[in-house]
Amino acid sequence: MRSKVFWLVVLALAILVAVISCYAPRYGGGSEIIPPMHPIYDEPEYPLYEYDESDIYEPYIEETLPPDPGELDLQTNNVFVAGRYAGFLTWGYFRHSAVYEDIAIADSQVRDTYTGAILYTQDIIDTEMMDKVLSLLAGAILAHTPQAAPYLYMIEADWLRHLVIDHEGLRVMLAPDITPWDLGFMHILLTYEELDEAFLLGVELGLREPPHRPMVALTFDDGPSSYTDMILDILEAHGARATFCVLGNRIHHRPETLVRAVASGSEVIGHSWDHSDFTRLNASAISSQITRTSAEIEAATGISPPPLVRVPYGATNSRVINTARDLGYSLLHWSVDPQDWANRDAYVIYEHIMRRAIEGSIILLHDIHTSTAEAMTMVIPRLIEEGFQLVTASELIAHHYGELEAGEVYKGFRNPW
Ligand code: NI
Image (cartoon, rainbow, N blue to C red; front, side):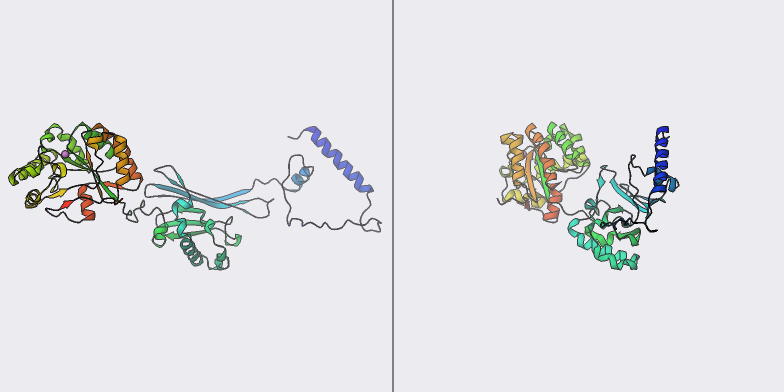
């Protein structure tokens, strides 16, 4: 509602204008007054309707243009892919009689519903491969709209601003706010097959195998003990696996711990029955140490362990090796030894491992010390952060050496520095 005063002012102005116009001399018609020169500045091609409340022309505009709420014409396309990626594209126009051209409206969003994160183009497309992606896009545009050919020299990364992850490829929306107006809205599909590695989420969508991550095997001797479960807690929390080299005569104390280890993907192998030095034993005693322990592991876990033994102290001679070979067993040594049994210092253990671990390392530890369990709270997440996958000794050997060979001594890879 306009106040009465407002309308009185308008009326007074109108009367004033009327009175002045009656007396004002006209251009032409014999008048002596010279018309003003045409202004030098460029006038806009069409009227601008931006004004504020105090603009004295406001009543004039309101009277000459009928009230028009405008018309919003929008379409939306929602997609949800792989039970994980949600996205939408919205496009259309806003039309208003007071606006010279329709206003193009375009919006899009992709969200990773696992993490809640909004994904931007650089999270979806490898920007290092942008040239390849833009040339694919140009080809797809040309196939879709041949009359776009004259505009394709303008193509740039910003043309990928609106996209969604769809089932068969990336759906790219080209809107008039980015691309030349004449082309209107275009919906272009770039298939995952042609994008290949330029599409960063190929592994998540199950389109590609994950790249190989360097392997490290953590091995824990002399258990099981109360610390074994603490270490399993950490391994399980990080989806990691390890190898537990147990003493046969300790298994009956904690059979459920070994069941848990096997159930979470770790492996359990023998480390002798009673920690005897095998080099001081005859062949039949060595043989008994190995087979009795394996039988006890199988009785506890229901799974027969791989033919792999960690001999106490790493002490071997030709008799030990020949006896193992005759039994079909291989020996598991190590390449990284943080001396956790001696220093009992979680930080020293952590530092040693982080400095020495490389692809293919087999790390010697003992799950009978609180400091070792404590070190694992730092070591396990840090190794994963650095790109390592924590696997069992058997997995590491299978990857780096091939099938287990009886009588072979596997040490893992050592950092030469
Ligand atoms: Ni030992």
